[in-house]
Image: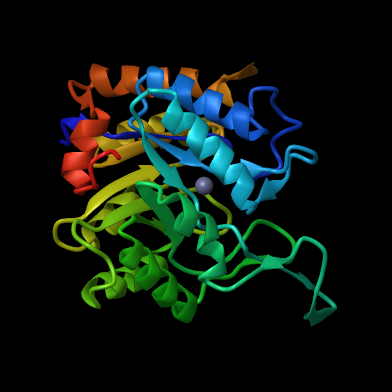
Length: 295
Ligand SMILES: [Zn+2]
């Protein structure tokens, strides 16, 4: 069992959740404050998306990332910053005429998805390792091998650590290719994202099968959504992995009780410590992941 567990707190995501909980942070300042509180509660890493303060919708605007990340860095609270690089892959098709892209489409190339990474040089950024039918309807998340190889190469050049997001078993197959091709520095870092329709369901046997497919020396975490978030903390620790909680994936502390990010981190910490493990400090994680020292 993994004895020193990294807690990543996914602060806000890009989902349609702003109207569902008053705790979902929207402005860069709110996102930073929520991240700082999560770090104080024990989060080792904060995973940052940004939103348009006017509409609450997910955004790729570099200025919003800059403000959120600088506020976290300037706070004096020690935490590793992981920014998403998954935005810009949304393709919404007209089901009657699928050559037409309709409202909701935000599709740009692999390098364009990295503009904020180029500028802000976070400790870690994500790379969504394949395409996916995303939810119901006609939304596709598009991330092709060409885009992924181009993105991975650029992230490597920037000296930023990649967290490979795996939504299904084929994504893991491709991610292993990236590692074999030398596009990912050691140790390769994986996030096994379960329960996202329609990728891999949150099934313990499936998680075990995916863990068995990881390359030598991999460091991995896993999460699941909603009510499965906390059971999945225990599940991941049992299999030797790290964990992720936060409002990107789950809004509730218990039935009917809306959570803050800090409360979700506290709950994860309690589970980890009750299992006889401990929570990794940012310095522990820097050493494990061979991150550059804090500038
Ligand atoms: Zn995310």
